[in-house]
Length: 374
Image (cartoon, rainbow, N blue to C red; front, side):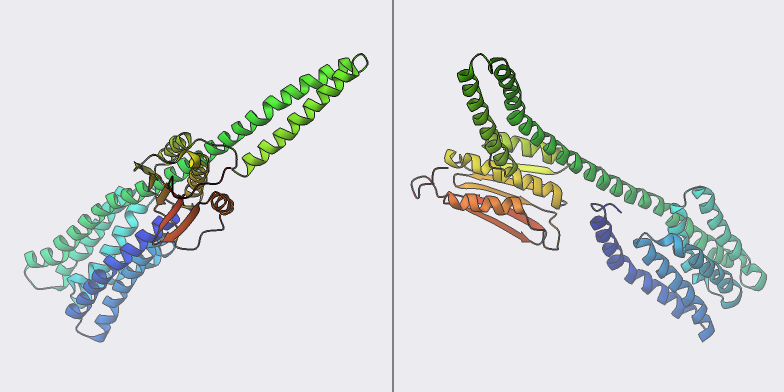
């Protein structure tokens, strides 16, 4: 089961159990109490109700297929017993519920199965005419029209219900793919940055080595100079690569803000940006790093539907929903940035409460406490 879909399924399952099990159980209990004349009648009718509740519970867990045959057999047997022996129009209760759950989820011949289910309920109900001396119209109404009509209506309503759940799963799967694509794009951008750092240097080094090979016998001093430049280039490249790997390369907050918006929108996440004031330019680079790391964490660790980014004169605040109820894994990137922000007289705050995750980086306002030079 896809990890992004599982939480949604659990929420829908809990909602269905809390909202529908009590009225379904109460309706079944009413059928047993009203229509039972002996304890044996109560056992038969209760077995149909229990089978229906089991089927519904398994349906909410998306595990109905294993229990469907048993539940159908029990409820299909209770209905004729209710018609011919117990004199219970409500004996169709269990079959109505189980059938309406099973039929829409068949892979093939669902329409034929729906017609067959309604036909079975009507045909069995009509057999009441063989053992009853009541008015024919009353018998047909109680045992044929009402039970068959209830089965038809409820089963018909379950078809769009199934489509609703299918759409939810499709949306969740699409959102998962979009998030993966957003992370992939971030990796591509990282690879592009790495190429920018190393590609040019390696090309220059290649040319200088080729030149040194030509001059090694004729101009040793020039060769020595070229080798010194190569050494310097390689050292500088190693430094820049480390900075890139540890999110320490100089970034632009405006560019990172635009990139974050594009990534969130690509992942199907609503994003809102509030600019309360212009950010202190001395904190621009660090805030860009915080925003980049926070964006990556949201895409990888949350199931966010909306993100709010607030820019103020003292820093940046990013709040997202969809945070897991369990503690997040250690976020090494933010831990590293917290030290760098602290070194610049700032503070990085991370909070997780009630499904919301907040990341905030703040610095003293200009004129209150100078930031250390980076």
